[in-house]
Image: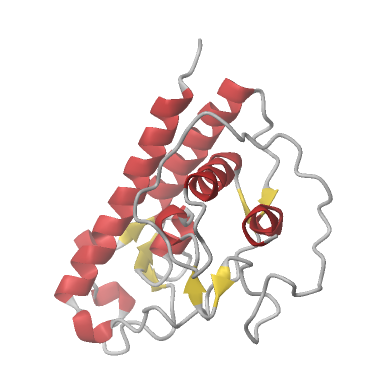
Length: 203
């Protein structure tokens, strides 16, 4: 069976839109309970992404060449070039040439506490800060993913329709990545260093 990469990526983008729609609904319902905003990069410590997310980030960089002012275009175009097969050295260089904040573990795309690839940010970045629910939570059905959000609300009291179902989101992301990797002869087990992708943007 032959998979079509554009269709797979389009479905990935739909998953991103789904996650964003939860955020929009939460902000509308609880505007005073949300601390997340541009200028706060406390949770931005992601180091690796899967193959489909690496592809989307690389495509976004390729299609948005004007990063001189660290501005991001809202249009996340995707083409069929730049698929990452070899992740190279998996050792992270501790030299902070791509990090200009006080957190040495910060994502290399975080510049002046702002995300330079915001329209193409990974799924985990689109759900962090929300109230999450998962069958894997041992003590509670729902849990807060940011200690600064929802200070007046117990996670279990939060409306379920405004929570992010981690099980469903993760299952869809895993399946989309697997389909993408099968279509391109890439191992789904290989994750890509964000620092390697950042070199393309900031070199």
